[in-house]
Image 1 (tube, rainbow, N blue to C red):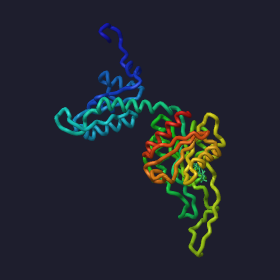
Image 2: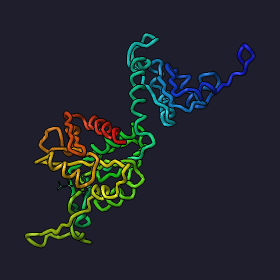
Image 3: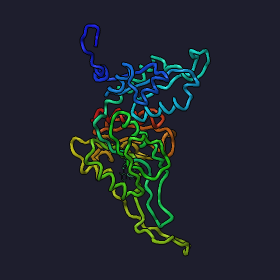
Image 4: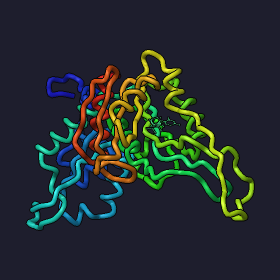
Length: 334
Ligand code: CTP
């Protein structure tokens, strides 16, 4: 009851807010938030909020390190709340360590960056493929390539961060930093990549195919290990299916299709030809002549070529940053 005698709805604030920031978030409040307590207005608001919640822990260093605190942070993050990690510096106790509330200007910057990014691909479904393919010769050998899948995984993570529902189809690679909410289908061969991508693409708004598929596979796979009986051994190879081209053939007007081109010569012309032949909206060109680009590296240098030939070359950057550039161009198409 307000002093006026008017009834106050205790969940009104939680329902009203578009965003909820708990800063500072004490060890006590965090423990209560993690365990569903509701003994003050803040907690009633928290429990009834249906908007993104950010919390900025602030406490003394030993409290911050305490396993109950780390467990509570983990519980809240797993529930979907966003932690604004404490900074290092002088604390109220006079001790120096981690536990200072994230600086207000950093909180503001983090939230505005996330808000700007979260919106762009919400309700969009995007297929990404990445990594190499392995084409089996016999039970113990394959034809493969050096692709690490890092570029495609960075793209998948970036699209997810911008609100997309991402489906990643990934060839055999040891790269592992895939965001947990990305649906990942692991495949091995170009045929499996073809099947998976063709099954997923029709329900997608866009697809970015960055995988380094084998262009040829052995005509037959030996049932048993091939023995070295002869001085020479000739391998018959047959073409694999072109996944990107097959998606280009079934692409609907509203769908956006993006490919990659890895070139060593006549880069621009070859990439533009691929864009046209495979019915793409834009193509991301990597040249093997650029030092910062290539398989396994953490950096890449790309040129984006759009339909009609308009192109834009970017600086050499970490693949995570390159992914942002690609996502930003894709935003203009979706
Ligand atoms: N691609 C594909 N299926 C294949 C081969 C390539 O989907 N069997 C896709 C790649 O994922 C990439 C694009 O096609 O997005 C271009 O790949 P690239 O290897 O540069 O070119 P190719 O089309 O294979 O042509 P070439 O090897 O003659 O350069």
